[in-house]
Length: 348
Image (cartoon, rainbow, N blue to C red; front, side, top):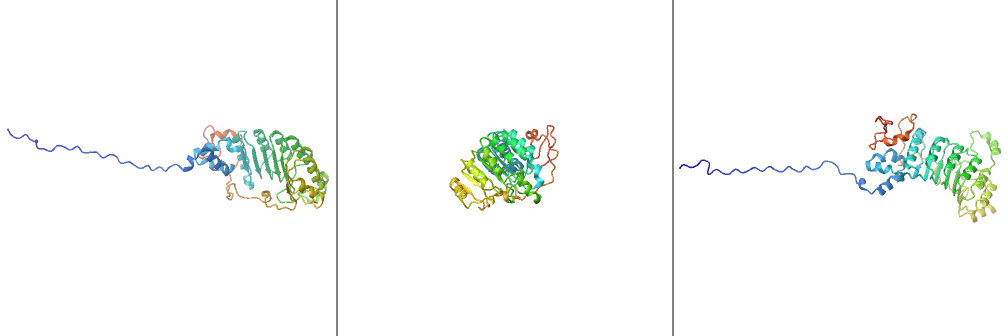
């Protein structure tokens, strides 16, 4: 028989299909701060201050956005060094937003160089647990508005007022009568350092003003309504010895007293000796004022950067609180229910 064709043919070798190569991921690893514990992240954000949080930090990532919405982050709100007038309305909006974020947990609030009666009412109605309030150079806030606001703040323990010339002695007395828990009170003259309250637009009116309010009337108002004070600061006042003596008699619990730039006082005799004996922490009229930040305007923001501001108009701002839930964590602005933009900017 003939040879069968193909008997000695080599067996076919099945070709192997190479395994697909593992393609390295091109996506960048997540930034290290995302993995930080929540309390550490909150601590970092607190140090930035409310302006930096509202304008930039909350837009970094969704994790930071969630932490920035936590009411615990807004228990202390400090809007200081807010000098430029073209940002005035912007700070009103930011302050309201910060107060809303606190959801009633706000205990310490500082406002400097902005504010009006409406803002004071807004704050007081939503911050009934406030224990410390500091208002600096609040020229658009009336004395009546301050009195009405603190009357709602029954937990207030510290009140610091600086640079408001036209709060009258009756306002001071009303404040003291409304705040039974008040232990620390500051009522300082204007940042220029001139004696308070003799900063008049017309120098010819000095005599009339002095006749309207005696030089010791503010001291007497404090004595009548704030006998439990432990800390008192009255810088740049025109108080005389009689007023100081009334304070020493009427505020027996006083531990610290700051009367720097009260140049109407004569402390060379027995009154000066009594002050040194009775007061543990005493600042005298001629002591250095280098630690008083309100004497010099700082034109930098909370991050130490020079202000740069665009001409955004906030005059049409109404009922802004309803927009907070529609704010994009990606930093594109505010949104209404229909998705249309409210503020087409990244300030908040």
